[in-house]
Length: 389
Image (cartoon, rainbow, N blue to C red; front, side, top):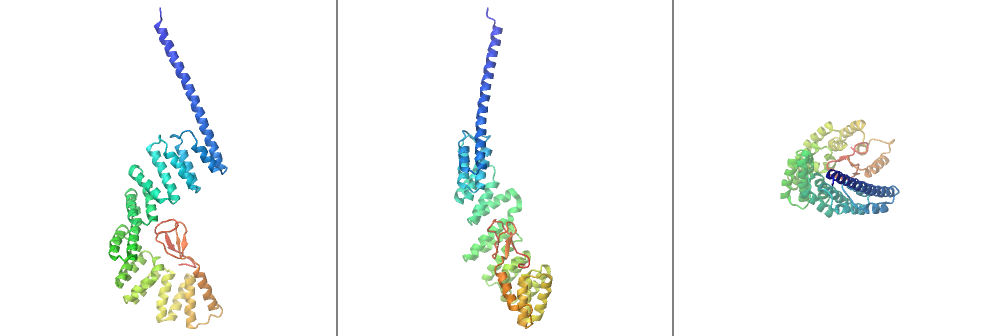
C-alpha cells in the first residue's frame, strides 16, 4: 500500500534539493559575473593609472550591462574625463549611460546633468541649454539646471532669460540672488543707453534698485542718463551717491563726476564732498582730486596737503603729482632728479593693473562689474598698495 506521508516527504526533499542546486548555480553564476565585472573594472582603472585613457574607456564601455549598482562608477568616470578636458570622451561616456533602459528617473536626470555640463565645457551652449531646459520641466531637481542656464544666458548676454532663471533660484535660495538680478537689469539699462533708447533705461533701473536698493551701478547709469538729458545737477547727485555706496567707483568715475559738477556750477560743493570722502577713506584718487582743486588757487597749500598724506600713506600716483607740483613751483629737487623720477614713476604706472577680482585674482586696467575670469558679480576692486589705491 502506498505510504502517502512518505511520498509527501520525498517530494518536499526533492523540491528543496532542486532549489538548493539552482541557488548554488545562480550564486556561482553571479560570482563569475561579479568577478568578470571586477576584473574589467580593475583593468580599466589600471589603464587610467597608466595614462592610457583610450583603452580604459573601451574596457568600461564593453562591460556587458550597466545596472543600478554600476551607474555611479560610470558617472564618476565620465566626470574624470571632463576634468581632464577630454570632452569627446566625457560626452561619449554620459551618452552611453543615458541609453540604458533600466535607469531610474533620478539616475537619468543625473546623467543628463553631467552631459549638459560636458556640452557647456565643450562650448556647445545650444545643446547644453536644451538639456537643462528639459530637466527643468521633468526633473524634481531645479537648482542645478537653473544655475547652469543662468550661466549660459549670461555668457550669451540674454539678460531677460537670465533674469527668469535668477528669479527661479531666488525662490529656492532666498534673497541671495537679488544683487544678481539687480546687475542683470543694469545690463539691460546699459544696452538701452548704448543704442540711445532712453525711455527703456528708467524702467530697467527701477527694477535694478527694487532688487538691490544699494546698487551703486544703478546710480552710475542713472547719472549717465541724467547727463545725456543735460540734467547736470541730478547727474552730480547720482555720481556722489554711487561713490558713497561704493567708494571704489570714484576710481573710474572721477572725470565724469567732476564734469557734472562743473556743468552745474558746484565746484565748491564737490571740494567739500571730496574732503569728506578723504576723511572717511583716504583714497589716493580723492586725495589727488582735492589737491588739484587746491592747486588752482593755492599751489603751496596743495603741496603741503599732498606731503601730509604722502607721509602717512605713500603711493606712486601721489608721488608723481607731488613732483609735478614742486617742479612747477620752482622748488629745487637736485638730489632726486625730478625729470628722471617723474619719467620712472610714469613708466611704473603705465604697466600696473588697476583692478583685481577678489574671487579669482583676475586683474587688468579696466573695471568689470562681472569678472571675465570667474563671472562673479561685484568681485572687482581697486588694487590697494603703493602702486594702487
